[in-house]
Length: 427
Image (tube, rainbow, N blue to C red; front, side, top):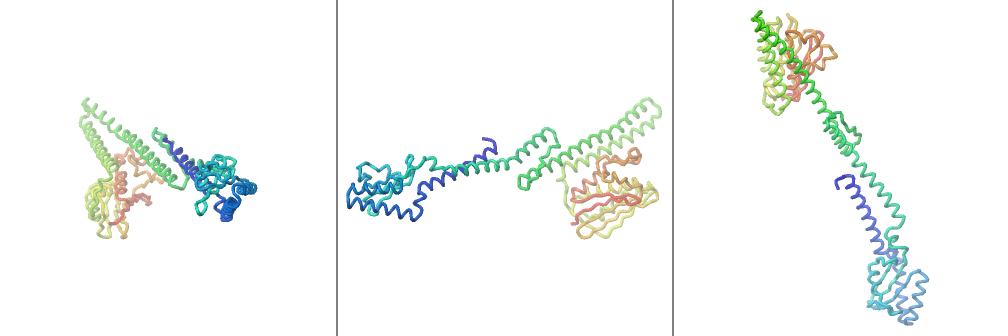
C-alpha cells in the first residue's frame, strides 16, 4: 500500500473500530447491569433465595423459586452444585458456568454465573439478547461509528490534499513548467512546506530567466566585435589601409579579452560564493589605493577623484572582491563624468554600518531604468555604441560582490549626476 491517504484513513478506521469493539467487549464482559450496586444486591438476593428454597424444600421448591425469578426478570435461572450439575433437572451446566463466569455471550443469550460464598453452589442467570451482533454493536453505536468514519475520511483527505497539490506542482515543474505553483493558503506545517516550494520555484524561475537573458546578451555582445574582426581581417588581406585594419583587430581583440575576463569574474562569484575569504580589510587604505590607481584614467578624461574618509575603517571580508566592487563603481563614474568635474568618493561608518558613496556630475540615469543598471550587460539606451562604454558587467560584478558580503548596493539620481551607495556590515 503506497498511498498515504489510504494509510492514514485505514489507521484512523482501525483505531476507531478497535475502540468501539473494546468498549463493547468490556461492557458485555462485566455486564452493564452488574456494575450498579442495586442490581448486584438483587442478584445476590435471588441467589440466596434459590439456595434457601432448595435447602428447605428440595428440587420442587427450587423449581418454583426459579420460575418466579423467570417471571420477574424474563430470564432463565439455574442453581447447580459445585460441579455444575443442575439441582432441578440434573443436567450439566458447566458450559453455562464457563460462559457466565466471564459474563460473555453464549449464542443469543447473555449469561451471568457466580459461585456462592462457601463454594457449594453456582447461581446462573441467562438473559435473552436480540442477537450477539446487536449486543456487541447496537444500532445507535453503529450510527456513531459511521459518523466517526466519515470524519476520519474527511481528516485524511484534509491532511493529504496539500501533498497531492504539491506532487502535481512538482511534476509540472519537473516537466519544464517553471510557472507551476501550489498557491497554498494553509497555516499549518503542510502549508508552510507548499509555500517553501513556491518560493523555491520562484527563485529558480528567476535564475533560469536571468540565465537565458545572460546568454542572449552574451551572444549580442560577442556578435558585434566578431563581425568587426571579420571585416578588419578582410581589409588586412586586401592590403587597403592595413595599419588601420590591424589597429581595429587589436582593439576588438582587447574588447573580447575584457569581455571574457569580466564574464569569468561574474561566473566565479555566482557559481562559487563559498570562496569568499573572510579577513580584516582596512577599507580606507583599500579605497586610497583604488583612487590612486584610477586617478590616471580620470586625468585622461579631464576630471578628478576626491576621497573623503571619516578615519580608519576595518571590516571583515574578501579584499579582492571588495576591490572589484569599489573599482568598478568608481570606473563607471569616471566613464560618465563630464570634463572639469570632480568625482566624490566618501567613506563613512556609524558603528554598525559602513557606507561608501560614489557620486559623479554626469547626465544620470532615467528613473524608469534606474533599478536595472546592476543587471549584466544592461546599458542605458544611447550609450551602447559609445566608444567609452563598457560591456555592461562592471556594476553587475560590484552588486554580486556586495551581496556576498551581506551588503546592499543602490543607485539614485543626485541631480546632477548619479550617486551609487554601498552599505556593508561593520566588523
